[in-house]
Length: 461
Image 1 (tube, helix red, strand yellow):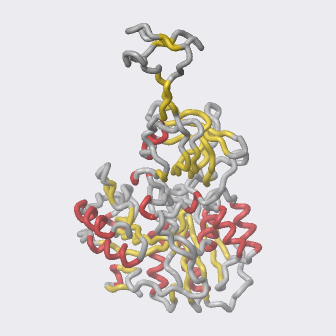
Image 2 (cartoon, helix red, strand yellow):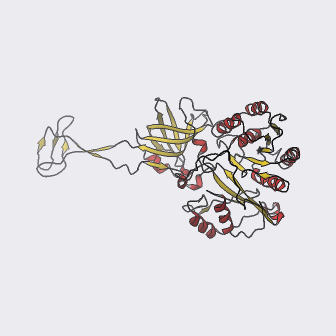
């Protein structure tokens, strides 16, 4: 633990925490809801919505959703809050069952550039605990870790993520603990209704092709449902349209990088790609696709430096039909993650989207038609011309006819089907709806219904 020595007089406190859940139980966002409920009873003011920051989804030791939390508040009672949050993290985490929590506290309005840089890298690469601890010490950030301390990385990355550009919102409704593990009951027709009414301002509500509700998880954790969209009011309105009959614990709105493809904004070079990293590559198809058992499609990509790497499109993404029609020379941008090599397989690019920029032309060749009778002629051999079998007409000069093939694919952007979306995957409807840079000097006025707890019997503003 390191004690802060900077900005002790400031009333701005940034609280970051991560890795409190296990694969079976608990939820870091639910702990954020409980902590926020406590803070709202004190004389504190939230200067931003709680942040839910999804980090690199390819980290092998990630938590279920690899999401970290940041709460930014204005308070005069730093020590009391630090002690409460530390105790809450320690008492309500799945330590010993896979959780390795970390919590960090930054005092002061300005977020150090070192934290911003760590946050950016943590979206698409591996950050070590050693690196995180070094930055925390250099910036005099107070922090606590439990287990192996892996959660410190997400804690610092969440504080460093300001989401000044594109972002989305999610309202998460929470169950009472006695209901966890029982079936979640939602009216599917209401999900479909509000999804159509709010389009394109909410996303990933219902997968029409597979007739699957996407807003409810399936495990025993406290989340009842989560609705994602472009503004706080539209997600809360949508939650109300569900008319949930279960007695819930409450809900909270998060501002998030979900649905932004933020992990794929990093340009990759094939000669330098590292396992578990992510980003985008501009290249061309250098080996024709082939389908393997399971319906997955493999091909090879070559970048502008002539470096090649195998790439894979997996059947659940819904992109395999497109991938199987790719041809040598097709130019594309791909968003991808890098799967590590094994003794049996090389390093491979797992494709998350394909932007087809240029299609190479493919040609079909046909024997010419007879000038006398119109029947298709037969070749007499290499450079020997053609002869008509019907009328006997010969032509030593004529060549085969050539026509451009119809490839049955078009240039453009192709993204996975909703059921295969990761938290960070940008839905097709969000392209062109990205939010512009926010004013950093103005603290946003929060939507009045951003938080609700059943124990308070009223909205907390």
